[in-house]
Image 1: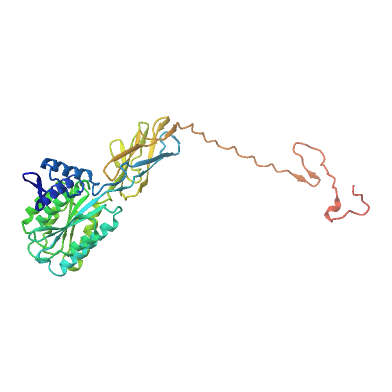
Image 2 (image 1 turned 180 degrees about the horizontal axis):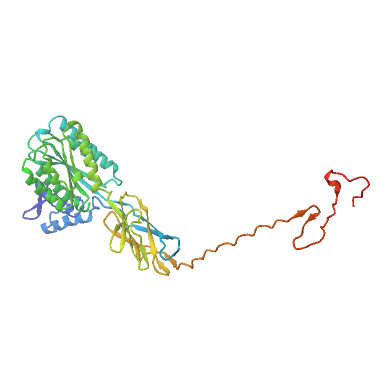
Length: 451
């Protein structure tokens, strides 16, 4: 709004109203807010006072930033357990130490911005352009459909040929984004460097109050040699890299400069290429998923366990399960994992190692054991194990082997007709009466008493 001075008052010119709105909009965007405008009629107000009122309107009616990180800022927690078996052993006799660690990370959803830079040069005419747009719309649909909060993921569309143009700024209106993709044409040259620069400016504009570096990406889809050479492409890509933006390139024909594209991408996995028109759609979808995985909410997380050898208990070489990296006096196990939002535990991770007690008495099986986890934001959290003791005992005396005495054989007894002969005695034979003579036949003889 511009004011002109008359003799009795200040009046406005409606044709200049847009300039005030534009100034307020720029100020609001820089602070991550939106501007709301009202018509002000101030026939007696000075220009300075009107300017103050305009700034006040922006400040009072300001809204929350477009995209905020969802979830808690609390770090992960780790649960640990250490056991030894057996708890008693002889000096020089190995025991088994088992270490268990489990990390639980809070729910974490990181906002993500992705710019689609789509080739609209003349070489894309026909089926290749149609397949590229189908693949791009599939990427947009998948990104916005998988977002947990409505504004977790924002997508923008850039069309480039001889020049680059933003068809859709960053946003999450699926219908509007799909219509923007449909507007991509096919004529002119291939100024891909201009596409990277245009996408870069839009990402920087959307970063105010939005995603942090490392959560923004550019998907460049092209089919031919870069119009301004590889040097200009590398210069534009270097600016994006410096601001933490991930770059992926989809080469959609054999004429695409894949050697240069390989130097542009921020990760070798972010270069996808095909020569066949029938594979263009799938190539773009695969690249979109890779970019979402690298820059989006699914961030790498790592759990590690490190044990330091004690003075009275030595680690047995080669006994660690799973195998551990060996330092001068310690062992380290590392467990990589893809963290998924939603308080998903990492683990439990179990390791074992054989330990050899070398001194008499009770001693810890390790000098120190620590479990560490790196969460989705790159923060490291560590917890110490409660290290158990092992009781080392001295070996006892070795028993002497004894030769058992032979058992004497029984002595045979001689008999004669009159009866047994008692050794060492002489005289007549001893006759023993035979009782119950009828037992042999099962009855008593007639006339005999049973007594």
